[in-house]
Length: 182
Image (tube, rainbow, N blue to C red; front, side, top):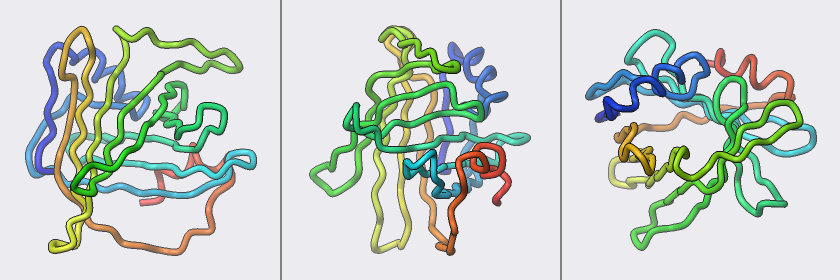
């Protein structure tokens, strides 16, 4: 990634996220980055695991598991190793053809209980991703903010893609093993 930035006021939350592969406090420029996407079946629902590695410290990852939620009519991003933080994703195309992603409602899930996160405590995420045909690479900019502290964390840069065959994984395999598929 070209750059990884953060707000010092968010350090406690960023440190707490390291144990769950959510966020991390380190910053940097020209940071090596790798993302692995793996499709799997979540009890009959097509899902994709996105495991992102940032070479800024020991084991710095950001894990997300995405699936379409018919009831909410959107993609739901299930975040972190323990998959307790859920957020709606709203996708649109920009006038230049880039993909723009914004978060919607957010909630914690513990067992069969769901607890809505009030707006002042939410992490509002804005992502812009596009493919640069001339450079044969994806370009991405991610900004996480909060109504109370403003900018929290973000990164921007580019990455290339290598495609490989994948048989997919069963749901019980994905959370424990997807991160090891480097």
